[in-house]
Image 1 (tube, rainbow, N blue to C red):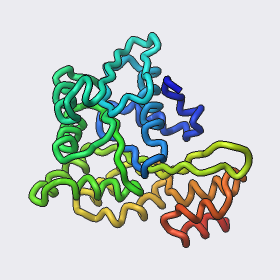
Image 2: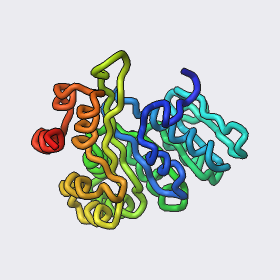
Image 3: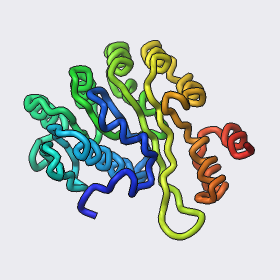
Length: 254
């Protein structure tokens, strides 16, 4: 479809919409190619415009969905890389001069784009973007590893201060009927996670997610187990993409 879908139509958790209403910070969509990152990102952008009058600039390659303010008093400027801007870095610099409330970046591909996105998130903008990464914790590691070694400590500090959430998702065939459903994990950055990022202890983030349900966190294994237990997904498909087979088995046995 040409227009961005709603979060409800995509079958995404209702509290995901809260991320689009944050006053600032960085929100990352992660997952492999074909996992629906762009679709979820467009839905989040559309959700933001439907709930508050904001100025939004998108940088995409290519523009996949039409995002519309729908008479809510907001303004959207969708720009295509190669057509309206030479590259993401140039487009992001131009966007920052317009002082938008929300910036949607199709993908953080290089060090300069990453650094500009973090600066934008630190200075009061809400930055929504996506990244090719297997999980929420690996998305953080990929951002850090993409930067020169001498800059990595600074990038960790910026991430610890500006990162709000990472959503990692996969699309899986429904066990009954046609179509696919989304399995996702949600990392919300609280004080403990922020300290882990700052101190380079990203390997501990999955454990923090298991105990962070009260903060809105969701592990992939818990999500998969719920889909299996409600009859939406078969167990073999769940085991095929689970990060931790032992944890998945524990959740499915409950």
